[in-house]
Image (tube, rainbow, N blue to C red):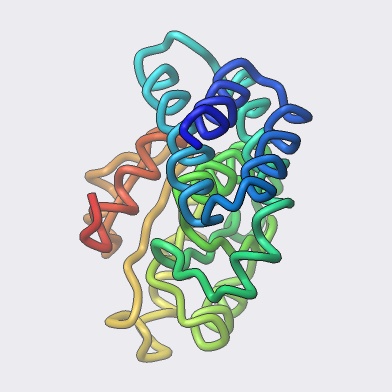
Length: 213
């Protein structure tokens, strides 16, 4: 049993999406609980990648390939996990704020969140404050995560937080912000709760915000 889980983990660390998918199917065929495959195979593999990224041993292209591996495995597991009503670590709604069209960094963070066991609702780019508000009402997330990659769109982050407050929803969610011009001090100053300077740090921050770190 442990061998195939190690194979899944290693396929992520060695950037082989097809192998990840193959080994996840093999693990299911062997009767291993899908939640165990997720935690001890996929999440364990991404944890190693996250640590390497944090230490600058690998860079964004490698992380993206590893995240693709995780998605390949999740494609196999998701229908079964859904049928079994597996409980995710938490639910995160994320998007790039209004007037910002940057996508790659946000999608990398989304993949890392999923790899860590979160359910992710990705709203895309150029997201109006009202869309974030509607998403809180619809999905009841634990966390709202906003991305702002250019300085000129930082006011959109503040506008979105104000919209959440005005809608009376601020106490229902934790708010995270990330992006090149963003600092932790600024996020706290404008009323946010957390900050991630990169995808790995974002996962760590999200876990801390919901008390599972």
